[in-house]
Length: 107
Image (tube, rainbow, N blue to C red; front, top):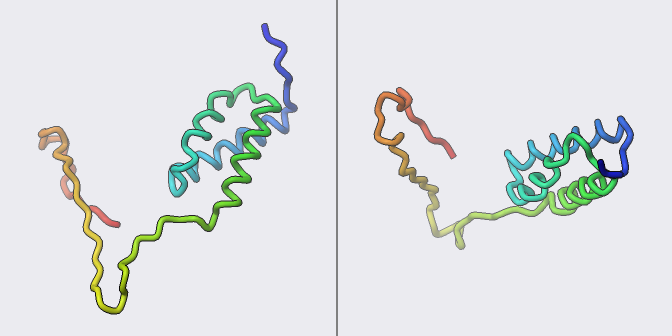
């Protein structure tokens, strides 16, 4: 049995909620925080004060970098017609019975 410091019930609830928000962000728009979120989820049942501090650190990183992004655009907008093309090599493991009836891909 270890003597890890405990957090209050309210802090535990806030920790779980914060990690849930980070999971949503990671999945939908911020893959750059995946490793930090993975580490935070490891102690979801028994968070420590140090884990709460790390959660706050990741939240601060999100707030400080909310305007960062990857810009994909042509070098000269007036002269170049620009289109985006996507490719996929999925063949559903060669099993046509598990292939969806209609395949659509959107960017």
